[in-house]
Amino acid sequence: MNFWQRALKSITRRKGKSFILFLVLFILGNVIAGAVAIQQSTANVERETKRKMGNVATVEMDWEGFEKDHADASDEERSQEDFYPKPPALDLYEQIGQLSYVKYFDYQNQAWLETTKLKAYTPEDESVGMGGNYFSLKGGNLVEPLDMQEGLIRLEEGEGLTEKDVSELTNAVLISKEIAELNNLSVGDQLVWDTRAEVMMEGGSSEGVSDDSEDATDETAESGNRVATFDYPVTIAGIFSVIKKDQSNQSSSSDQSDSQNSDQVWQVMEQINTFYASNNLVQDFNKLQSEKLWGQEVIEEESDAYYQPIFVLNSTDDVEAFKQEAGALLPQYYRIIANTDQYEQIAGGFTRLGVIANYIVIIASIATIFIISLVVLLFLRDRKQELGIYLSLGESRGKVIGQIVIEVLLVSLAALLLSLVTGNLLGGAVSNTLMQNDWMSNQNDMGGVYSGGLMAADIDYMDIKNAYQVSFSAGYIITYLLLGLGTVLFSAILPLLYILRLNPKKIMM
Image 1 (cartoon, helix red, strand yellow):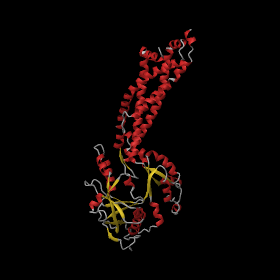
Image 2 (cartoon, helix red, strand yellow):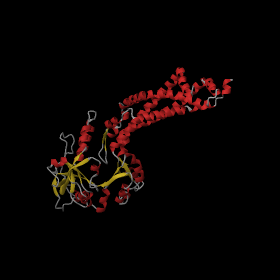
Image 3 (cartoon, one colour):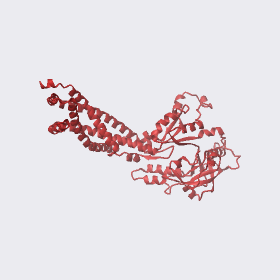
Image 4 (tube, one colour):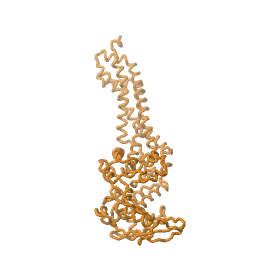
């Protein structure tokens, strides 16, 4: 009879001991399986949430670090022109944009305007609104804006911006379909931004406001403040639609709060009320707006400081490496931030759960190694006579060890396969219980919704909760079986050392 047959016979003859080993492994296997199921699910939450947040990064000043280092600075020092660090130069952004992690990049200039006659879009139910005609203006250095490349908007009519539009100062802009319909506009039409601004009056004077422009006119608001206006003509080079408008409406469910739905509608409204143009146009508009509405002189060199670089990375997996490599190129007090940096704030509960699951897996695996080692060792001591007979009859120690390993593995495999199912159910039950607890949600910190500051990304607690699914995934099954069998094999080391030390002559005396 070979050692395979002896192993099978041994399991069936010693039903009681085999059952004890099975029961111990089944109980410990449930703990490990439940923890692995939670671990895999939290990893899926992080992966899916970061994917929705987007692999987008930018550069910002570390004001907290700067103020910490200059907390003792006097007012006189702060008034110095070179007190605050200058932003990175555009050629540095170009250098960072050439890193291998970057899919494409742009540096943008932005503006905001309020108009008198040009109508802004508001939802039909008037659930959100600014109480006026407010628009955003996004500049760029690309023919196809980043929002279009990332699938947030789609060009419906017209040719869009050209190379000439982004390299020279032209008046070409892209507008949304809703704004075009609301104001009866089409591609090729000239549009006038009849910009207005309410200037705070001090002592009934209009100090600091220039009146020498032929384009600027004045009137008085009901509040008594001076209202300055001027016209800025542009030409419609293309009409776009907001792709996320329909998606936002479809994703709204009864489980979402009114505030969450309102935030989504607000984001869509803001995207619709956005004009896209070149950086040259936005810079020129900002200069004229400052001079004609606010009476502020703009120095050409200083206007470059308002560019915001946007780096779209190849993958969210590249974010940390990109932050380290690009951060080393930046001047002091400037750093790289990414959309995914906000993950901890919106899914902190799931991160904590994943950490706890990791600790449980480690502790349960160590406990399994010690417990199985002791149980098998005790069983082998009872079988000392049997093992001595095998060795005295000339059976090699390798085959005796192989018999014991086969016995342990067969019983362990049966226990692990069964606990694979029950452990998954246990992990799901624990997760469902925690889902009812506020410990899992950071809604008090974030209001339940994250809206990406770099590129639009609506993520609320329901999105995160839906991404958390305890299921029989291939990753869960493979991870658990490899971990379980590896733990069992490792726990067999101590009993095998016991067999190697057996002396058949002393046993048979």
